Image 1 (cartoon, rainbow, N blue to C red):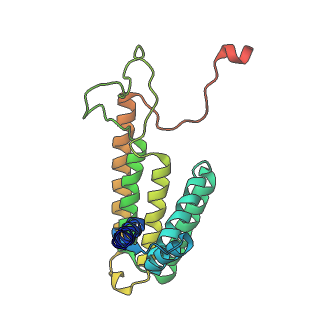
Image 2: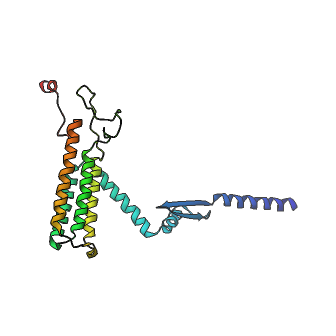
Image 3: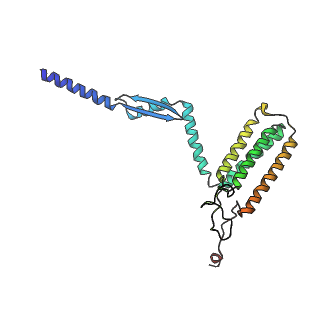
Length: 229
């Protein structure tokens, strides 16, 4: 009788130990929010998933789903620059119509123009400026005898488009707040921006001439032997 009692207690301890080892801890991290859920040994896999999903706030789940879908369509737009820029030009046209309709927000427009000019300069500039960096494998050739190296932009085309489009959308959103409609004599802002644009582009063109590079690719060059073939 004593041996049977000891064996029963031993089996009970082993089952209890197995039950403790079967407990699982599931961690879900999203946007620096950590959710920890301890599941009982009797919980099945569908019930575990349901409990984890219920622990996530709806707003966090919506943001995660929206970010995933947005990144999917953003990746699909990479090989279609024409459609991307047509959409951006449409956004710029709507912004211009908004400014013309309300006859205000000239400071917002001026800030957008300065920001876009800065992006344009980065788009036209090489990734490594020969005036600031020592010549290395990624620098531009300055002589005809130098080895040919492709032009690498400081700001890639896709990033230029994406940042430009976001700036236009943000500026359009800011026009919804009357407090940002600062009264100003807008012809002075337009004149100052034109002067700044001319001086900046003149400096950029002189830089292109000095280091003999063209930031645009108008098509793939074909050799004469390839045409004759």
